[in-house]
Image 1 (spheres, rainbow, N blue to C red):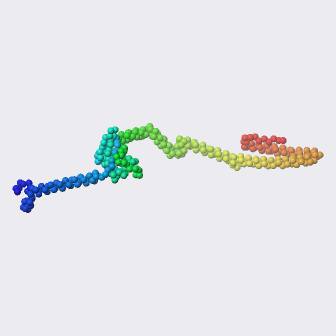
Image 2: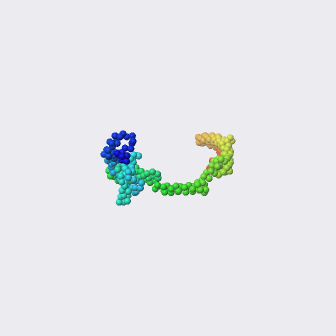
Image 3: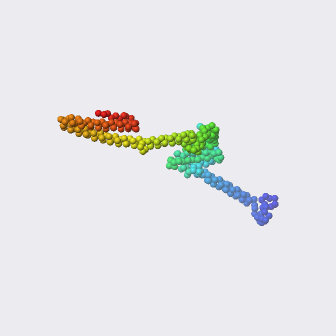
Length: 324
């Protein structure tokens, strides 16, 4: 075999008998065996990947309907509580212009989907679109095979114009609030002026009355009022005051009324005697004259005391004692 033969071994250290043993038929058989082994490895890898992807598992069909399927691709996972339970098999366009997303859900994981389940599609500013399922009540009936559900879309990018508008309005309101002639600044100035008045001599009283001068005038008025009340209290309730005079006068009046009652008792006794002894009428008349004079004297003293009381204490009604 010449050195130009491609089937000749290139290793010079190979034994001479090995060169004679490498016939074309054996080399071709080894090549075919190697090719079959490689194909088997590739097929096994594909089958394993398909098995790992759940191709051979029994699945349940789920159709999600949305206004558009932007960001959704075939093979995307449908997650529940962060775990993939289904994959997007194909995308369809319905007659009404809505996007239909057909999802294969593994039969073992379909038990998490209920009649009350909610399906959402989240589109973020960064990252891929995500399909999520939420089941609030796990005791609800399970979702049947081939069910169609509305897909709720949460697009953050679509909310950006609205957020920008809100921020712009907020900034404009903030500028109006912080302007030099705004009501907020005016109120803060008034509050600062009010709190500055607290540091004055009269503190909060001066701030409430508009200055220390007004507070000083109020304090003087209160002092004068207290002095007048003290004098009035002394003149009315103090020693030798109006109350004491009235009490003394009342005591004198009670004494005079006692005298009057004694005189009247004497008159009653004389009248009784006059009625019993009608013959001695002249003597009885002589006794009545002094008694009448005593009664008139007592009544005059009572009238004088009443006049004195009216002078010292201005009663609303006039007390009058009429002599008989």
